[in-house]
Image (cartoon, rainbow, N blue to C red; front, top):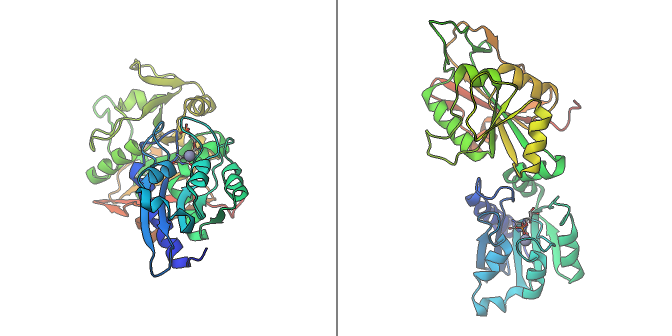
Length: 347
Ligand code: AOF
Ligand code: ZN
């Protein structure tokens, strides 16, 4: 089966574009996109059908793409490539195995973005395809990275048996996080710009749960929802023992490990940790983080609580990496920096 790197890149980029349409809606499942291309890279190349996984319980991406094929185009599958952002599954879950569906439809070649670490799949999908003489290839490294990025919550959660952890805080230029609370000035004191607060609400709507410490809960009484963007409301988690009453839908944990174990058992793939300073410092020191989002306000003021320092293995995204991944660099009077864990440095 012939193809070209450019045609494979186009096919996988399209599959990824389809996958991200369901970002934030598929948990605990991954986002997956699939497109079926007849003779990629040849003069008569043609997109036959495409599909994506819309939410847990619905058709998987491959099944959705196969269902969208016309009966005539189905006959062309032996000369077609399926571009899938995740290894096709091999298990009977809520839906039958996608690897089987691709084989019985007669697909000639499959290019996949990342392996599926779900123990029910974990290479079995690829083996099943290969055993049926389907040509199976991994995407280019660039696109493997991209597919890993779009599914980072699912992949980290399955691999590390804990939710993907995004730590977010706002600080002044010299690293202040909060001012002294007095009767006259009880707070909360918004550190970042109004524009940044809207983006934080969008970030909230993209994760499965939000977590704050009991002190932040008591002092700030945060609503912990995505009201500024009208987004999906994540689960609300509080760490420690708050002295003010908790609504029935807020879950409280004595220790961070308890919160993470509970999230894992309940299919919560990601948590946005919003503070305060000691909760953030705990997660950082324990190495329990995957992504840091730091909002730095231009205007200095007199803080009494300091933001945590960045760990040595925090690697900033470059400006263009931030843009490509949909992060702003500036929000009014606030700068936004995103850091990932550097895999080259030992902790
Ligand atoms: C695919 N294509 O589009 C998705 C896959 O509960 P189920 O039956 O939906 O199975 C969920 C598991 O299937 C999930 O943990 C992941 O391993 C895989 N998801 N696989 O081939 C898809 N969404
Ligand atoms: Zn599947």
